[in-house]
Image (cartoon, rainbow, N blue to C red; front, side, top):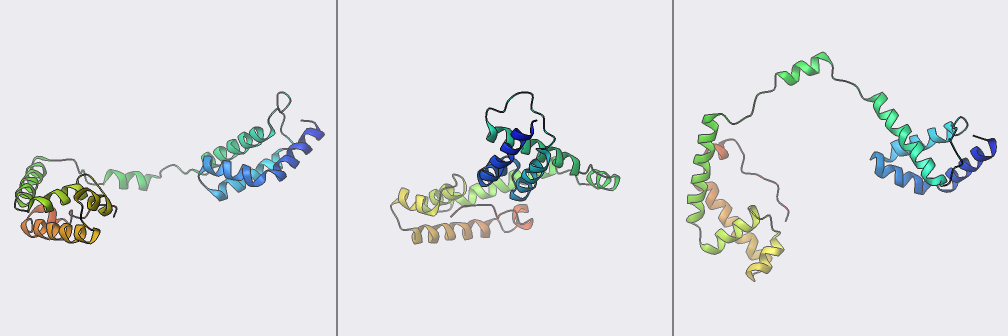
Length: 182
C-alpha cells in the first residue's frame, strides 16, 4: 500500500472510529474486542497491501478489523484440557429412563386432574399464563377483568395445583418454577 493510501485510511479510521466500532461491536459481540481490533487495524495499516485501489474505505477497515478480531478469538480460545474432558464424561446421563417416564406421566395426570377441579375461569387463566405464555395484561384484556384479578385468580389456581401435587415427583424435585414474563 502506498504511503498516501495508508495515511488516508488512517484518517478515515480516526474520522469514523465511533461508527466503525459500533458496526464491529455487532459483529464480535463486545465493545472491548471491537476497540482492540480497531487499534490493531491502525497498527497494521502500514503493512497492509490491498490487491487493488480501495473503493469503500469503511468496508475495507471494517473487514480488516473483523478479521483481526476473528484471528484473536481463535488464538485465545483454549481447547479442553484432560481434566475438563474427564469431568464432562462424568456428567450424569439425564435421558428419560422408563422410571422417569412413568413418574412424569403420573405427574401430568395428577396436574390434569387438579386443573379439572378448578373453576373454568381459573383453569383458562392458568392455561393462558403457563401454556400460552401470555402476560397478565394480555390475560386481563382477554377475560375483560383487571390485572389484579388475574393475579388473584392465577395465584389461587397455582396454590390449588401445588397442594394437589404436593406428593408428586415434580414438587419434590422443585420443578414447578418456570420462566414466565409478567
